[in-house]
Length: 159
Image (tube, rainbow, N blue to C red; front, top):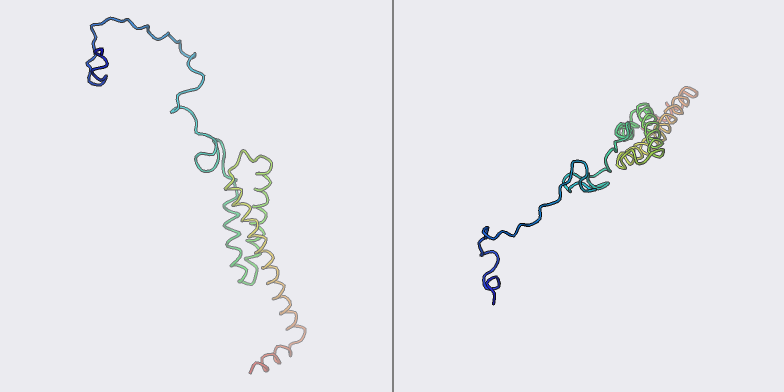
């Protein structure tokens, strides 16, 4: 057996006395390096860090649309006026942001598109509920004004 086979490589001391003259690495001038940068200098893959690739941004009114849409639903209970106002604004903002996303989806994040869509839907629901609530109050007021004795008869029947 040879000496290298008897002693493992990790226990063998490095012998600098042997002059084997390995060829030096070829000289590479600046700017002519490898075609791809080292892994630590490369951008992350598209969609790796939660919301899309580089350059993607949130739609400008997606959060406002979602918040107004959510607030508009319970606001329907306050005579329908606040729900109607918040709902229409949420509907308009959400629809505008959805159009922006559909024109250029690679520019915006998908999560902001979903927020705008949810805000638009909540705004639609709140607008319809508020309109029904306002219509109900108008019908009650018109009924009382047209026939004042109807309200008195209604109260008498409750007793």
